[in-house]
Length: 378
Image (cartoon, rainbow, N blue to C red; front, side):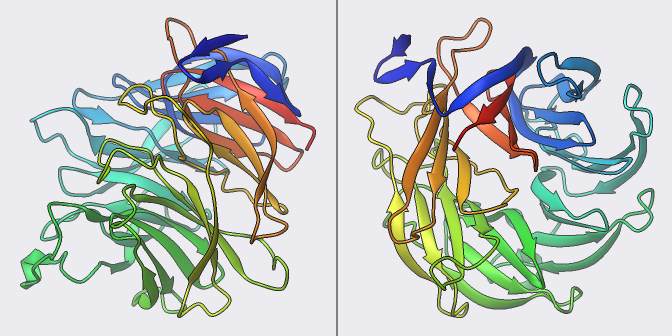
């Protein structure tokens, strides 16, 4: 067992490694029909496609590159269609950002078939149900990312269905933000039924009614930053009721845009039974006596958005992967842990995203290096 500060590498409690390959740092992962798709953090690496039909021996079969000044760190797949983001990254240039669409009927040779152009900054994170994409573009006339719904009925000709923004973002329409810079911006929406659950960075989160997709309506809005220092990253409704209540798990992100050094990012459990009045009812934190700095963060990030029961798997950067049981939403408890060894050439772990497949396998990517397939006994 190795250590780095107060982080112990190689810790495994009820979660074990099945397979692994070195892979450039990953921002997100999705798995479908025996293939894993990883969006990468650093250019020129764009998207990798990995054959995982034999979980013990994953094989890289294709890797897309991106132009200078772009990262394409998010990906979603439905059938033979793959969506990836194009977002401006570490450059003063203004390459074209947006949402790219690929035909992946031949997994080894993805073919671009469509592109939705956003403003220069591009698109951050998104979700998709195959027919629609729910995403966070920057659009002309707005400050920061907004909410948009895109119709993919014809993937080669994506069409905007509707958009929503927080009052103050539409500077082109005469609105004036009451916050600094892009502190209030859409991170990404998650759909359940006719609702979108939307993380809005230092603007907290919103619940939107999309029964009429062309005119999303605000159901409620809750913001706890400030006084809490970390921005809201993911708003994930649980599949069924817990103790008779409708519950949403919300992760903040341990990131450089914090309002104060501590506390490190953690997750919230929010009662949304009365959706016009969401109420935080509990939190889950991990103790850490080290530092959390750029390149070696320790704190909450992203849960697996595939929800099958009361247990969620949540990436915690240097804290690895945590299995958390929300059966009692007033008292969430950790029931499993997996902290990888650092990837090739790295001194730390930065577990970034995880996908939970319906057969129980977990697919974990590291922000710096590494792709792992795991099996859980929780």
